[in-house]
Image (cartoon, rainbow over all chains, first blue to last red; front, top):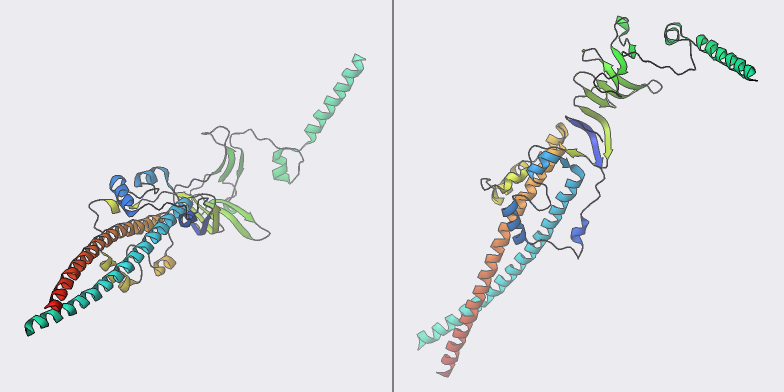
Length: 119
Length: 236
Protein backbone atom coordinates (compact mmCIF):
# COMPACT_ATOMS: atom_id res chain seq x y z
CA UNK A 1 0.00 0.00 0.00
CA UNK A 2 2.78 2.39 0.93
CA UNK A 3 6.35 1.77 -0.15
CA UNK A 4 9.13 3.99 1.17
CA UNK A 5 12.72 3.50 0.05
CA UNK A 6 14.23 5.06 3.16
CA UNK A 7 13.50 5.87 6.77
CA UNK A 8 10.08 6.45 8.27
CA UNK A 9 9.99 8.43 11.46
CA UNK A 10 6.92 8.60 13.64
CA UNK A 11 6.26 9.30 17.28
CA UNK A 12 4.28 6.10 17.48
CA UNK A 13 3.56 3.23 15.17
CA UNK A 14 0.61 1.00 15.86
CA UNK A 15 -0.23 -2.18 14.03
CA UNK A 16 -2.98 -4.76 14.38
CA UNK A 17 -1.42 -8.24 14.20
CA UNK A 18 -4.02 -10.97 13.95
CA UNK A 19 -2.09 -13.84 15.53
CA UNK A 20 -1.36 -12.78 19.10
CA UNK A 21 0.12 -15.88 20.76
CA UNK A 22 -1.71 -16.38 24.05
CA UNK A 23 -2.46 -19.89 22.75
CA UNK A 24 0.92 -20.93 24.20
CA UNK A 25 -0.69 -20.99 27.64
CA UNK A 26 -3.66 -23.08 26.54
CA UNK A 27 -3.58 -26.59 28.02
CA UNK A 28 -3.90 -28.02 24.51
CA UNK A 29 -0.70 -26.32 23.31
CA UNK A 30 2.13 -28.72 22.67
CA UNK A 31 5.31 -27.04 23.86
CA UNK A 32 8.28 -28.26 21.82
CA UNK A 33 10.90 -29.80 24.10
CA UNK A 34 14.33 -28.19 24.40
CA UNK A 35 15.76 -31.33 22.83
CA UNK A 36 13.55 -30.87 19.76
CA UNK A 37 14.55 -27.22 19.70
CA UNK A 38 18.23 -28.10 19.79
CA UNK A 39 18.02 -30.46 16.83
CA UNK A 40 15.91 -27.93 14.86
CA UNK A 41 18.53 -25.22 15.45
CA UNK A 42 21.36 -27.58 14.53
CA UNK A 43 19.64 -28.36 11.24
CA UNK A 44 18.17 -24.97 10.23
CA UNK A 45 20.35 -22.40 12.06
CA UNK A 46 17.31 -20.39 13.10
CA UNK A 47 14.42 -20.77 15.54
CA UNK A 48 11.26 -22.58 14.41
CA UNK A 49 8.59 -20.23 12.94
CA UNK A 50 11.02 -17.32 12.90
CA UNK A 51 12.01 -16.19 9.41
CA UNK A 52 15.64 -16.78 8.44
CA UNK A 53 18.04 -13.92 7.69
CA UNK A 54 17.63 -14.74 4.00
CA UNK A 55 13.84 -14.55 4.11
CA UNK A 56 13.98 -11.26 5.97
CA UNK A 57 16.32 -9.68 3.45
CA UNK A 58 14.16 -10.85 0.56
CA UNK A 59 10.64 -10.26 1.84
CA UNK A 60 11.07 -7.74 4.62
CA UNK A 61 9.96 -8.17 8.19
CA UNK A 62 6.30 -7.84 9.14
CA UNK A 63 6.71 -5.93 12.39
CA UNK A 64 3.38 -6.82 13.96
CA UNK A 65 3.56 -10.48 13.08
CA UNK A 66 7.17 -10.68 14.19
CA UNK A 67 6.37 -9.11 17.55
CA UNK A 68 3.74 -11.81 17.99
CA UNK A 69 6.29 -14.50 17.08
CA UNK A 70 8.91 -13.05 19.44
CA UNK A 71 6.33 -12.99 22.21
CA UNK A 72 5.45 -16.60 21.44
CA UNK A 73 9.13 -17.56 21.80
CA UNK A 74 9.36 -15.63 25.08
CA UNK A 75 6.22 -17.34 26.36
CA UNK A 76 7.64 -20.74 25.42
CA UNK A 77 10.93 -19.90 27.14
CA UNK A 78 9.02 -18.80 30.23
CA UNK A 79 7.35 -22.22 30.37
CA UNK A 80 10.72 -23.95 30.01
CA UNK A 81 12.23 -21.70 32.69
CA UNK A 82 9.37 -22.48 35.08
CA UNK A 83 9.79 -26.22 34.41
CA UNK A 84 13.55 -25.98 34.99
CA UNK A 85 13.00 -23.97 38.15
CA UNK A 86 10.71 -26.70 39.47
CA UNK A 87 13.23 -29.37 38.54
CA UNK A 88 15.97 -27.42 40.31
CA UNK A 89 13.86 -27.14 43.45
CA UNK A 90 13.09 -30.85 43.35
CA UNK A 91 16.75 -31.73 42.92
CA UNK A 92 17.65 -29.41 45.77
CA UNK A 93 15.14 -31.15 48.03
CA UNK A 94 16.29 -34.60 47.01
CA UNK A 95 19.92 -33.65 47.65
CA UNK A 96 18.99 -32.24 51.03
CA UNK A 97 17.23 -35.47 51.94
CA UNK A 98 20.25 -37.43 50.75
CA UNK A 99 22.52 -35.23 52.86
CA UNK A 100 20.59 -36.07 56.01
CA UNK A 101 20.59 -39.80 55.17
CA UNK A 102 24.33 -39.50 54.60
CA UNK A 103 24.85 -37.76 57.96
CA UNK A 104 22.72 -40.35 59.73
CA UNK A 105 24.68 -43.20 58.13
CA UNK A 106 27.90 -41.47 59.12
CA UNK A 107 26.80 -41.37 62.75
CA UNK A 108 25.94 -45.08 62.68
CA UNK A 109 29.31 -45.85 61.06
CA UNK A 110 31.13 -43.92 63.77
CA UNK A 111 29.17 -45.82 66.45
CA UNK A 112 30.22 -49.12 64.83
CA UNK A 113 33.85 -47.99 64.67
CA UNK A 114 33.77 -46.98 68.34
CA UNK A 115 32.35 -50.35 69.28
CA UNK A 116 35.00 -52.25 67.34
CA UNK A 117 37.78 -50.06 68.84
CA UNK A 118 36.51 -50.74 72.36
CA UNK A 119 36.72 -54.47 71.89
CA UNK B 1 -42.47 18.65 -41.11
CA UNK B 2 -38.89 17.79 -41.96
CA UNK B 3 -38.09 21.41 -42.70
CA UNK B 4 -39.52 22.47 -39.36
CA UNK B 5 -37.36 19.93 -37.52
CA UNK B 6 -34.31 21.03 -39.46
CA UNK B 7 -34.81 24.69 -38.60
CA UNK B 8 -35.34 23.79 -34.94
CA UNK B 9 -32.07 21.89 -34.97
CA UNK B 10 -30.34 24.87 -36.58
CA UNK B 11 -31.70 27.20 -33.91
CA UNK B 12 -30.49 24.82 -31.16
CA UNK B 13 -27.02 24.54 -32.69
CA UNK B 14 -26.84 28.30 -33.02
CA UNK B 15 -27.74 28.71 -29.36
CA UNK B 16 -25.03 26.33 -28.18
CA UNK B 17 -22.46 27.98 -30.42
CA UNK B 18 -23.37 31.40 -29.02
CA UNK B 19 -23.27 30.05 -25.49
CA UNK B 20 -19.81 28.55 -25.87
CA UNK B 21 -18.42 31.69 -27.45
CA UNK B 22 -19.71 33.64 -24.43
CA UNK B 23 -17.98 31.31 -21.94
CA UNK B 24 -14.75 32.91 -20.69
CA UNK B 25 -11.68 30.91 -21.57
CA UNK B 26 -9.08 29.96 -18.95
CA UNK B 27 -6.89 32.91 -19.87
CA UNK B 28 -9.63 35.41 -19.01
CA UNK B 29 -10.46 33.47 -15.84
CA UNK B 30 -6.86 33.65 -14.60
CA UNK B 31 -5.97 37.14 -15.80
CA UNK B 32 -9.26 38.98 -15.34
CA UNK B 33 -10.61 37.18 -12.28
CA UNK B 34 -13.67 35.97 -14.18
CA UNK B 35 -15.40 32.82 -13.03
CA UNK B 36 -16.71 29.97 -15.10
CA UNK B 37 -19.17 27.24 -14.29
CA UNK B 38 -17.91 25.17 -17.22
CA UNK B 39 -15.41 22.40 -16.75
CA UNK B 40 -11.97 23.31 -17.96
CA UNK B 41 -10.04 20.94 -20.16
CA UNK B 42 -6.35 21.28 -20.78
CA UNK B 43 -4.71 19.38 -23.56
CA UNK B 44 -1.41 21.21 -23.63
CA UNK B 45 1.51 19.00 -22.57
CA UNK B 46 2.58 21.60 -20.01
CA UNK B 47 -0.83 21.47 -18.35
CA UNK B 48 -1.24 24.02 -15.61
CA UNK B 49 1.79 25.93 -14.48
CA UNK B 50 2.27 28.13 -11.44
CA UNK B 51 4.82 30.62 -10.36
CA UNK B 52 5.25 29.64 -6.74
CA UNK B 53 7.83 32.29 -5.94
CA UNK B 54 6.12 35.70 -5.70
CA UNK B 55 9.46 37.47 -5.91
CA UNK B 56 10.11 35.88 -9.28
CA UNK B 57 6.59 36.02 -10.61
CA UNK B 58 7.60 35.23 -14.15
CA UNK B 59 9.45 32.02 -13.33
CA UNK B 60 7.27 28.97 -13.63
CA UNK B 61 8.32 26.39 -11.06
CA UNK B 62 5.33 24.13 -10.48
CA UNK B 63 3.46 22.22 -13.13
CA UNK B 64 0.42 20.02 -13.00
CA UNK B 65 0.80 18.10 -16.21
CA UNK B 66 0.75 14.75 -17.89
CA UNK B 67 3.77 12.57 -17.24
CA UNK B 68 5.72 12.12 -20.47
CA UNK B 69 7.12 8.87 -19.08
CA UNK B 70 3.91 7.26 -17.90
CA UNK B 71 0.81 7.75 -20.05
CA UNK B 72 -2.28 8.15 -17.89
CA UNK B 73 -0.34 9.65 -15.00
CA UNK B 74 -0.81 13.22 -13.83
CA UNK B 75 2.41 14.65 -12.52
CA UNK B 76 2.88 17.23 -9.79
CA UNK B 77 6.10 18.58 -11.21
CA UNK B 78 8.37 20.92 -9.28
CA UNK B 79 11.07 22.13 -11.60
CA UNK B 80 13.01 24.14 -9.05
CA UNK B 81 16.06 22.62 -7.41
CA UNK B 82 16.15 24.79 -4.31
CA UNK B 83 15.84 22.75 -1.13
CA UNK B 84 13.00 24.93 0.14
CA UNK B 85 10.78 24.21 -2.86
CA UNK B 86 8.08 21.64 -2.73
CA UNK B 87 4.42 20.99 -2.33
CA UNK B 88 2.27 21.62 0.67
CA UNK B 89 -1.22 20.61 1.69
CA UNK B 90 -2.32 23.40 3.96
CA UNK B 91 -5.35 24.50 5.92
CA UNK B 92 -5.47 28.31 6.06
CA UNK B 93 -8.45 28.27 8.37
CA UNK B 94 -6.46 26.39 11.01
CA UNK B 95 -3.15 27.89 9.86
CA UNK B 96 -1.84 24.36 9.76
CA UNK B 97 0.42 22.40 7.46
CA UNK B 98 -1.11 18.99 6.77
CA UNK B 99 1.51 17.49 4.50
CA UNK B 100 4.73 18.93 3.23
CA UNK B 101 6.81 17.50 0.42
CA UNK B 102 10.30 18.88 0.16
CA UNK B 103 11.27 18.28 -3.45
CA UNK B 104 14.95 18.03 -2.57
CA UNK B 105 15.90 15.44 -1.34
CA UNK B 106 12.34 14.20 -1.52
CA UNK B 107 11.42 14.11 2.15
CA UNK B 108 7.75 14.07 3.13
CA UNK B 109 6.47 15.51 6.38
CA UNK B 110 3.04 14.89 7.81
CA UNK B 111 2.33 17.35 10.61
CA UNK B 112 5.85 18.75 10.22
CA UNK B 113 7.32 21.16 7.67
CA UNK B 114 10.86 19.99 8.38
CA UNK B 115 11.10 16.28 7.61
CA UNK B 116 14.55 14.79 8.18
CA UNK B 117 13.80 11.38 6.69
CA UNK B 118 11.89 10.03 3.71
CA UNK B 119 8.63 10.04 5.62
CA UNK B 120 8.30 11.90 8.89
CA UNK B 121 5.05 11.71 10.78
CA UNK B 122 4.56 13.98 13.75
CA UNK B 123 2.16 11.60 15.43
CA UNK B 124 0.93 8.05 15.20
CA UNK B 125 0.82 5.72 12.26
CA UNK B 126 -1.83 3.03 12.34
CA UNK B 127 -1.54 0.19 9.91
CA UNK B 128 -2.71 -3.40 9.64
CA UNK B 129 0.77 -4.40 8.64
CA UNK B 130 4.17 -2.73 8.45
CA UNK B 131 7.12 -4.40 6.85
CA UNK B 132 10.72 -3.33 7.25
CA UNK B 133 14.03 -4.68 6.05
CA UNK B 134 16.47 -4.83 8.99
CA UNK B 135 20.03 -5.67 8.02
CA UNK B 136 21.17 -7.26 11.27
CA UNK B 137 18.97 -10.35 11.42
CA UNK B 138 20.35 -12.44 14.23
CA UNK B 139 20.81 -15.94 12.85
CA UNK B 140 24.57 -15.51 13.43
CA UNK B 141 23.95 -16.60 17.03
CA UNK B 142 23.61 -20.17 15.77
CA UNK B 143 26.84 -20.02 13.74
CA UNK B 144 29.49 -22.30 15.16
CA UNK B 145 31.87 -19.33 15.24
CA UNK B 146 29.61 -17.25 17.50
CA UNK B 147 30.99 -16.83 21.01
CA UNK B 148 28.06 -16.96 23.39
CA UNK B 149 28.78 -14.81 26.46
CA UNK B 150 28.51 -16.74 29.71
CA UNK B 151 25.65 -15.99 32.08
CA UNK B 152 28.30 -14.89 34.56
CA UNK B 153 29.50 -12.23 32.10
CA UNK B 154 25.91 -11.17 31.45
CA UNK B 155 25.25 -10.86 35.19
CA UNK B 156 28.38 -8.71 35.58
CA UNK B 157 27.34 -6.52 32.61
CA UNK B 158 23.84 -6.04 33.99
CA UNK B 159 25.19 -5.15 37.43
CA UNK B 160 27.50 -2.55 35.87
CA UNK B 161 25.22 -1.09 33.16
CA UNK B 162 21.65 -1.92 34.26
CA UNK B 163 20.67 -3.06 30.79
CA UNK B 164 21.32 -6.07 28.57
CA UNK B 165 24.48 -6.07 26.42
CA UNK B 166 23.74 -5.04 22.83
CA UNK B 167 20.45 -3.43 23.83
CA UNK B 168 19.99 0.34 23.87
CA UNK B 169 19.61 1.87 27.32
CA UNK B 170 16.56 3.90 28.30
CA UNK B 171 18.74 7.00 27.94
CA UNK B 172 19.78 6.11 24.40
CA UNK B 173 16.17 5.50 23.40
CA UNK B 174 15.06 8.87 24.73
CA UNK B 175 17.89 10.62 22.89
CA UNK B 176 17.78 8.76 19.60
CA UNK B 177 14.73 6.92 18.36
CA UNK B 178 14.03 3.25 18.32
CA UNK B 179 14.60 1.55 14.99
CA UNK B 180 11.81 -1.03 15.06
CA UNK B 181 13.42 -3.43 12.61
CA UNK B 182 16.87 -3.36 14.25
CA UNK B 183 15.28 -3.62 17.67
CA UNK B 184 13.29 -6.69 16.66
CA UNK B 185 16.50 -8.24 15.40
CA UNK B 186 18.19 -7.47 18.72
CA UNK B 187 15.28 -8.93 20.69
CA UNK B 188 15.48 -12.03 18.53
CA UNK B 189 19.21 -12.23 19.27
CA UNK B 190 18.46 -12.18 23.02
CA UNK B 191 15.81 -14.88 22.58
CA UNK B 192 18.21 -17.00 20.54
CA UNK B 193 20.91 -16.64 23.18
CA UNK B 194 18.47 -17.43 25.97
CA UNK B 195 17.34 -20.50 24.05
CA UNK B 196 20.95 -21.69 23.99
CA UNK B 197 21.28 -21.07 27.75
CA UNK B 198 18.05 -22.97 28.36
CA UNK B 199 19.30 -25.93 26.31
CA UNK B 200 22.66 -25.93 28.12
CA UNK B 201 20.93 -25.65 31.49
CA UNK B 202 18.55 -28.47 30.59
CA UNK B 203 21.57 -30.70 29.91
CA UNK B 204 23.15 -29.80 33.24
CA UNK B 205 19.87 -30.45 35.03
CA UNK B 206 19.65 -33.83 33.36
CA UNK B 207 23.25 -34.69 34.30
CA UNK B 208 22.57 -33.70 37.88
CA UNK B 209 19.42 -35.82 37.90
CA UNK B 210 21.59 -38.79 36.92
CA UNK B 211 24.08 -37.95 39.69
CA UNK B 212 21.33 -37.74 42.28
CA UNK B 213 19.90 -41.09 41.16
CA UNK B 214 23.36 -42.63 41.37
CA UNK B 215 23.87 -41.21 44.86
CA UNK B 216 20.51 -42.62 45.85
CA UNK B 217 21.73 -46.07 44.84
CA UNK B 218 25.03 -45.61 46.70
CA UNK B 219 23.18 -44.57 49.83
CA UNK B 220 20.84 -47.56 49.58
CA UNK B 221 23.84 -49.83 49.14
CA UNK B 222 25.58 -48.32 52.16
CA UNK B 223 22.35 -48.66 54.11
CA UNK B 224 22.32 -52.41 53.46
CA UNK B 225 25.99 -52.84 54.44
CA UNK B 226 25.58 -50.73 57.56
CA UNK B 227 22.48 -52.61 58.64
CA UNK B 228 24.37 -55.90 58.18
CA UNK B 229 27.30 -54.64 60.28
CA UNK B 230 24.95 -53.34 62.97
CA UNK B 231 23.10 -56.70 63.11
CA UNK B 232 26.43 -58.55 63.38
CA UNK B 233 27.56 -56.23 66.20
CA UNK B 234 24.30 -56.80 68.12
CA UNK B 235 24.79 -60.56 67.90
CA UNK B 236 28.28 -60.51 69.32
